[in-house]
Length: 251
Image 1 (tube, rainbow, N blue to C red):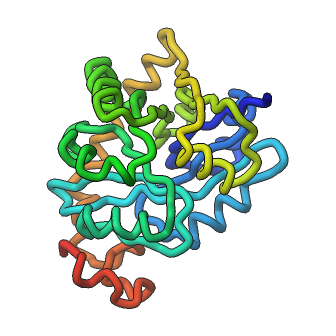
Image 2: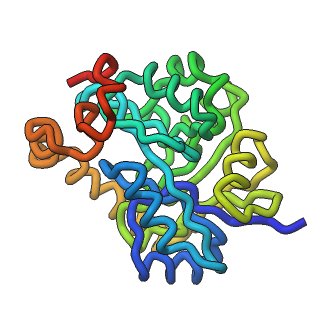
């Protein structure tokens, strides 16, 4: 049986990322940039996919307010879902669209689902991230414990916000994955897998760089740009969402 190696969450994508992914032996990456609408993410993913590397589009939706946001990764959305809506509304929409639902960096800082929230939505959740380069070792241990206690499949990703981190962590599925549908099925079926990541000083350095990048992720400048302008592409009141999420908006 042919195994498939997938980096299940990257934020950056260009020619150099594709080249790096191929050098790292990846068969597929999941591309889920912040604050970009699904049609744009899909178009970019399609542009960079080829016979050697499958690029699967996804959305890491920021639910809740900026100070108490909860990130949820959805793979296989057919219709756009905005950021800054309630967690309940996002989960309901993912379920309606039969997307694969993943929990990135559980209980990490103020941006992640708590064990209580994971338990509440465990029938919809398809996997919990147990290794993330932005984590410290105790975060990864806690994530593994949560996945085990909830009896949910695990996954790992590079969560690469920086090009050099692509391929630092990955999942090796014990099945052939040729397209987006195959990946969704593997996640929703709880397909057999191995969680892998690199090690050594270079890996530790890349992890430190990713953690330091959180300074920009949480900067006041970025908050002002997103919330005060109201012009962010994934703001729930954007005309593209046709008012469907107005009642679920937290802003």
